[in-house]
Image (cartoon, rainbow, N blue to C red; front, side):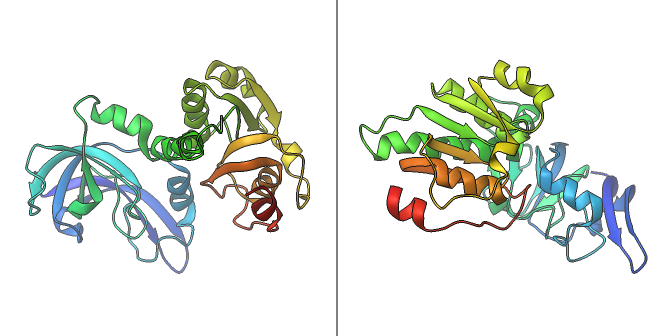
Length: 267
């Protein structure tokens, strides 16, 4: 590889926060034992927060953001990876405390990587990306209700933040699994889109922004919540006996105002 390459670099000084595409030296990459030529990287909610102002997530500057990427190994000091292998990275706080994927090259610990399945391309891997991986884990949690509680059929599943990356893929996957998916969004202009990817019903987020009751009428066998806050509080109160709620986001609020009632009464 060339000794220099381009990356998005963010920096925080006493006066301002900057972001720019810069030519940087290979020696700038401090951590890791595997060097990857990056093919693709996604744009996630956390990326947007970090690109805006660091979001108090980045502690050391200058910094390269990007919480996921796919590409090809070009140098490796890790016995599990060889030059030329295609790999995927999501998570591990890369792009936050480690330099991330918004760069032509990324250097990371080999334990952070997984080998790309032959059935998909590096582009497809990042089309799914961290959002898709999260949505799949949430969907598998819903599916687990039927597998762990034999005879407990799942019918009605709620997905909040349904037009977002995680929400959209969760709607698609859960619909493909045969569930009756109700999508929650405040963007009514996207209702037809939600129906096209499998949502049977659509509710407005405002219906879930009210102060939650300790226990509400049980409506949902399972739910995937991507936003947190009051919406999650109301979802918990409306989940049926033995329900499963997979919570994975805080776009609305990091605070959760709830009681033990949904847990001890409905299990």
